Amino acid sequence: MANISFIVKQKLESAIKILCRDFSSHVKRPGKDFSRNRKLPFEEVIRFLLPLQGQCMDQELFRHFSKKPLFFSTDYSGIPHSSAMIQARQKLSDSAMPALFHSFTETCKKGALFQGYQLLAIDGSQFSVPENLKEPLCWRKIPNISKGRNVIHLNAMYHLQSGIFEDVVFQPICEYNEHKALAQMVDRRSSAFPAIFMADRGYESYNTFAHIEQKGDKYVVRGRESGTGICSSLNLPDTEEYDIEKELYICKKHSKKVKTNPRKYKRIRSDATFDFFTDDCEEYRLNLRIVKIKLSETTTEVLFTNLSKEEFSADDLKRLYHMRWGIETAFDQLKYALGA
Image (cartoon, rainbow, N blue to C red; front, top):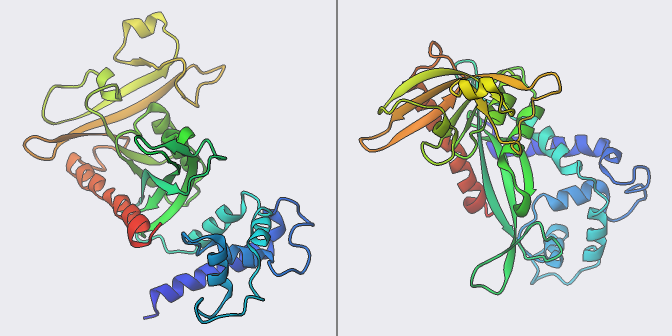
């Protein structure tokens, strides 16, 4: 059996070659940037950026361009200056690295389907980078410490059957919006197979459910049983377990029929996001299945889904949602085992 790391590296090499064939589509000034024969062509800049670690630019350049260890080498003639690399990097457009990412992940095997579905877990995590006050949207003050830090919020779509981060959205910490990021990843996903999106508490919203439904996919999203979550307005049974279906009409106007039938019509705040209202359609019909399952004698969990009872029982949903933990393990490996 071929070594898996060798196979993955070959796929990455192939993706880099494909990107470089059409590099003019991924620079800020097509026809000008990287058009001359220089020490830092487009492909070399991409190869330099991929394995970057936490060292200063000069050390990273030496590690990349020198084949000898630092303490044995005295030949610096083949190593570009840090200013040259910074200028070369600034020529790349915002599409370069995402194009490489998607080209690479599309070549990876997606694994067997789960009862005809791809299983996609959604979650977010924060990554700290060196402090830079010139990026105020990423900067956050740390209490009781003189210095702050820059933080980027990563929203990820993780393919549970293959262990691949299939899509990502980066947001500055001061403007991160996990609901918006999830809708963005759902809308731009294209696949011949239907998917089940799984997400933890915090992702529950009518807008999220509608985006997934409009794509013809399914979802299993954990809800908050207390506080201001969706459950608080649905008049749910006060029992240890239940499995019920509700037909709701989402709207913004506080009309007479909304007031007289609050169990059927759910009015959302005027400033709340719902992307499917139009001038001709001020209501959106949504069928929800709400399942409360018992995990232990003292612990319960509420799941929102559009999977039918005939296809997935409450016990099936319990086992299915437990599989979502794979994305937590993946984040742990990414941040600690791999040093991100």
